[in-house]
Length: 211
Image 1: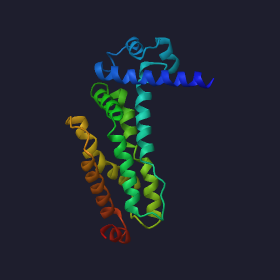
Image 2: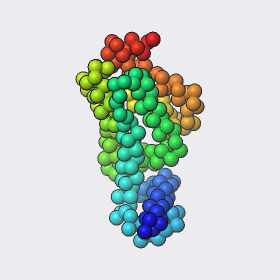
Image 3: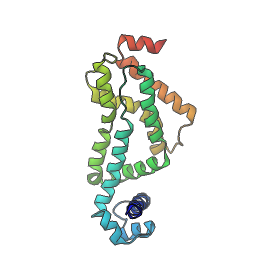
């Protein structure tokens, strides 16, 4: 039973990988389920056993990406750990996600499709905008603890992640830049943390950061 479950999961993963490849190469409209089945080396019936339609397959891929972004920004607040240390950990988790080939490939596919099929990707783009919710809980807890002074945690969460994405994600997508080198990643993270604390940190937090 366990082996059968693993085989089913592997087939599902193969279907998703094949779909991303074909959607990127030909676009959503021009990609057939037959083509995805051939690339995944499964039958079309197998695809429909997992996904009721091509649209649901696309949206499942997109939703999984948004879920990953939300999860990677989640971090348990610890009042005993310096604010800067925790923000660095959150930023490093985000950076690790943004610099993987799998993430970039999938995200490129979704953003490219948004230009030709906005109705298909509208919900995904909206969900992407809400993917900062993982860090929002941390911000609320740090604010309650007196370490941050934030009146709009959702806005602050989006701002913090944008400080990373602006330099680590978007250049890869639109300027065809390579993944930032480790030294550049460190600079991006340090800048994001400093700017966030200087903007929202309590006086005590800012003093600790400047030491």
